[in-house]
Structures are given as structure tokens and as C-alpha cells.
Length: 485
Image (tube, rainbow, N blue to C red; front, top):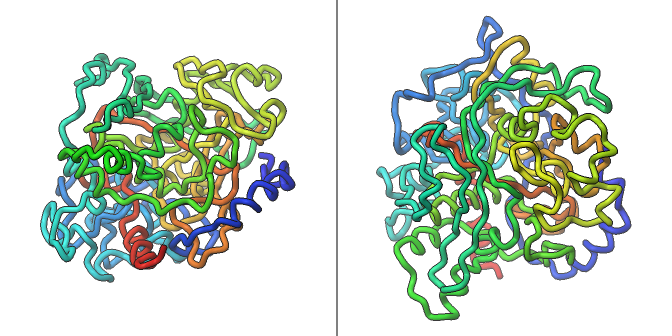
């Protein structure tokens, strides 16, 4: 995959020079270790696969476990807690038929510092639905979304009890201020099996794309397009609250819930880098920020949204195909389907302008790369060779590298292939002069955006913790920012 860092150094430096001149203080030093964790397997070589359909406990986390991005790692394990551990004490691995949670690694953790049970209790542990703040009030930031998900906003087409009932629908992000509602479209993705990764004879193939292995995917809805600034900024810039304050509109109960979810500090500059805003994809957020947005969106709509796993993303991108791209193997056809290095004019473009893939999803190839939930592990697929896996997820244990998919407007065609993988790097934040560096933003203009998914099967409390933002990173960041402007 061609590095976009080398493609546009002069343009990037020029854009960032003006941005950094107005830099504001941002929080949380990332981990420096770059070694990806290995997948955990049993003594027989088969991935550890506890049953997430009927866990020993559901609902809120155990009182001795902190609700992190996926906590629940027993205190007696030797490895550090990561951003999304979720390893039950009675099993060898996290939920998923072939998860590969790197709980046994010796490398440093990511956005959290120590395993649950070895540190102070986290907010949300005092009692179900309650966190020990000075006011002793419930705070949804610290509690898994499924434990407090409100009644859904009325969208009849979104209702489905089984896969056959799933329909496309238009989601509405409601606002108490008239005329400021935002909508986006969701597309049903039927469950099924596919071969993940690329065949050995695919042109421009990378070693981290193999071996190919069969994955079973449960049904879900996926955003027809990438999340736009219009959707993101009501949370990302706090526009939803600001509009109510300006117009004098009193907050509803739902507003009170969503307002309590942690928000980013003010960005250091215009994060669009003058490339366009209305109708354009949101970029430069960290994976943590994308996860927190999903939590806020769930509260707003009453439907459970999250980032896709890497397997879900590739399944949706391929859309039933087995070729290098969802439209075939010929990169000369890419201009009809994607914005990339040769046709983008060095910038991203409004979402949905290119042809969709066979399942109706736009910009799965190019425009902006997209965050998924997984840690980037180069040889992760070797864990599943010769097996059919269900719900695979490389649960993150450190900040870098995380997986982004799809390639961006500044990538060559090979980086936009359905199987192409990209691991994040500390270099994505190298332009940030603040100490500690941001937990919410990246400073490189080509950094990922994302799209949301909504699983048909809403997860229970234990599984849901795998998809949550890292509470400790946010808590430490808020403490570090206390009193700062």
C-alpha cells in the first residue's frame, strides 16, 4: 500500500502550518510500543471461544470490573488491560469464535494503564447504573450503552425481529431545536459467509492479507455513506447543546442523557483543512472519538450503533464478490467507484457521488479510509487458517496500531482493494505539539473517517463492553485538562 505520507508532503505541511499556529491544549499521551499483540489460542491451536450468547452474567459489569472499551480482564492475568479486553475470568479468550484478545502479551497497554482490579475503581462500579462522582449521579459515559439505551425514536422501517424483516431506513438524529435535525441512510446487510483476505495471486497483494479464511457474519445495517461533518459536529463540536443555549430551548430527558456523554475538547483548527464541510466526510478523529460518537448516536436515536469489526467491514465492502474490488479486478475502472490519488485533486469529496457497490454502499473504496474496531495484527489471519470463524475481533490492548480500511483520496489503487489493510501509527499525531497529545484528534489530514453499523442482534452487557470507548483514557484526559482553556 502506498503511503500517503510520501504522496503529498508539501501540501500537507502547508495546510498544517496554519492549523498548528492556533493549536489548543489537548490531552493523553499515547503508548509508544509498536509491537502488535499475538492472537491467543488454546493448547490445541484452536482460538479460545467462550460463549457470548449466554454469558455467566449480563447487564452491567461486575462491581469489581470497570466498564472500559471492553474490560472484564481478570486481575490475576499477567498481561495488561487494553482498550478492549473483555476476557471473562473463567475462559481463555474473549467473546467470539476466534477472537484473539492479546491478554497474554507483555507489551504496554494502550489507552488504559493497568488491569481492572489493580487500580482504583472506575466510575460506574459503585452500583448498577450509578457512578461515584461528587454528585453520585448516573453518567452514561462510564456504563455500557446497552444498559441504559432509551426507547428508540420512531422510524418504522428500522424495526426488525429477524433478518427477513430488515429494510433500508433513514435514521434521524433528533434535535430539540426546530430545523436542525440531521438524517442519514442505513442499508441492511444480510448474514452469510465469505472468504476474508486476498488470494495469493491477487496483484499488489500484501502479506498481512492472508491466509484467506472463511468467516461467518451475522446480519447488520451499515451506513450507506461515511459519517459526514453534518452528522458528527452536533456531538464533536457540541453544536446540539450550543443551539439550545442560543435559542433558549429547554433540554428534554433525552438531551440530558446525551449531554452527559463525554465530548471532545475544542479542535486546534478547522479539521476540514478547507477541503469542504457540508456533505463531506468527517476526518481526523481517533478511533476512541469514533467509538464515543457511536455511544452518543445510540443515545440520540435509541438504537445501538457501533463501529464495524474488520471482518464485517470487508464482508460489506466485497458485497458478495471475490475480486480485488467490488466491481472486478481492473483498477482502470476505479474512477467510476472511488476517489483516489489519480482523480481526487488532492482532497476528499462529498459522500455518495461515485457508484455504489453491489449492496448499495458508497465510497467503500477510497474517499476517506475508515476506522474499524480491531487492533492491527499483521499475521492475525494465521490464527484462523482452515477454520470458519464467527465474530472475529482483534480486541485492542494498546493505542497503536489500530485498523483502518478502504484507502483514501490520496492512495494509489492497490490501497483501495477490498482486502487491503492499514495500521494506524503514532506518526498520525506527530504534528501535535501538545504534551500530552490528544485522545480525540489526529493531526494528519489524510487520517480516517468512519461509518456506523447497527447489529440486528443487540449484544448483552459482557459482549457490549468490547465496543465501548475506553473510560480510563477519557477520565485521565478530563483530569489533565481540568482548569485549562
